Length: 514
Image 1: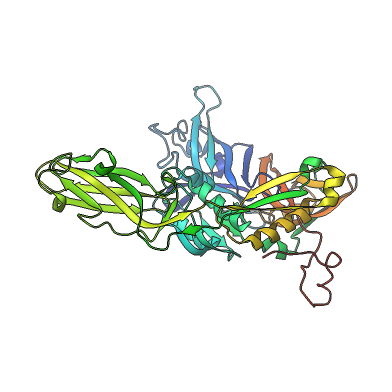
Image 2: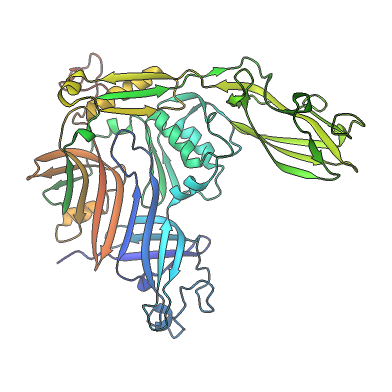
C-alpha cells in the first residue's frame, strides 16, 4: 500500500500567525525551488514556486461549519476570510514522520474561478524569497572592504524589508579586497549582486524547503563526503546524459584586481556650471531627493567606477547656491542643506532650500577614492587529453570581486577534474513515496545541498551527486520528488603534503582548492 503524505498547508493570515487550511486544499499540489542546473556555473538558485487550489464553495470548511463557504477565498468578497490576499506567507509541509517543509514563501497571485455552478475553486501561485532578491534594487550599500562572502551577504540582507525565514552561512574561503563596487546602485538587482559575490567565491546560494537561505563556501562540497541517502534501482525516473555538451576541458576564469586612488580627493561626480552644466533650481522651501549621480573616472571619460572613503561635502567648496542661475547675486549657500547617501557605485542627494526665495545650485560634487576595474586577468587551463579526444569544450566564469589568481587556478583545476571526462552523468532523478520505507524516509531528509548516491543497473550509473534543485508533486496522497543533480568527486580525500593515505596525488587523492 502506498505511503500517504499527511499534507499541511498554512497561511499567514495575520503577521506571525499561521492558520492551517489543509482541509480546503484540493488534490494536486506542486512546488519547485533551488538551482536549475548542474554545470560549473550553476551556483545560485532562481525563484521557487508553489501551485495549489483551494475549495471556494459551500463544501469547504467554512461551509461545513454553517458559514457561507462561497467566496471564502475570494479577495474583496464580503465572506472572504480575514487576511487572505496576495503577499501573505504560505508554507507546505508534511507531519506524518517528521516535519518536512516542501515550500515556504508568499502568495504572488490569486485567481478565483468564477461561476456559481462551476468549479468554485481558487488557484494560488506563490514564490519563495529568491523572488524578493530578484526584484529588490541594490541601493545605498557602500563598497565592501576586506570582507568575505558571508559577511557581504549579511550586509546586503540588512537592506531588505522581507527577510528569508532563516540563514545558514558558511565562512567564506576568500576575503575580497573590494566588493559591490561594480554593482550599479540605481539598477542592479540584489540577486545579481549576490550572484556576483557567490561566483567570486565559487560557492553556492540557495533556499531550503523551510525558507532557510544557505550559503556554501568554495570548499564545502569538497569536504562533504557523506551521502545522506542511497538509491539502488529504486528510482521512478532517471535522466542520464553522456554528451559532449556535458564536458568541460577548457575553462577560462577571470579575476579582477583593482586600482584604487591613493587619496580621497578624486571628484567622482560633479554638476557644475563651470563645466557648462545646468544649475539645479530650488524654489523656496523646496525638498529634492531624486538626484542620483553615478561615480565616474575623471581620467577615463567619466567611465563608470566604484568609490570608497567618500568625503562629507563642504559648504562653499563642494556645493554652491546663488540667487541667479549664472552664479551671480546673493550667496545663498547657508540656506542649503545637503545630505548625501553614498553607495558603492553612486550617490543619492537629498537637498533642501530653507530660504525664503529661489536659489540655484551652481556646483554639487562628491569626492572620494575611485576604485577602477580596468585590468581583469583571465586564467585559462585545459586538459589536453580531453581536448584531443572530444574537441575543445569551453566554459567561462567571471569572478567579479576575486583578485586572487591562485584561487582562480585552484577552482578551475577542480572543475576540470569533475567535468573533463566523458561519463554517464545523472542529471535528474525521481522517486516516489510508497511501500519502500527507505525511499520514503529519503524524501523527508533530502534537500538542496544534500549528497546522495545513485546506483542503476540498466545505465550502469553508480555515482555520488549533489542535489541542486527540488521539485515535488502530490496527487492522491502519493508524492513524487524530482531532484536536479550536479556531480560529486569520486575521491573522498584531498591532497595533503607528506600525509600517508592522502598524499598520493591522482591515486588516493586529487587536488583541492582553497
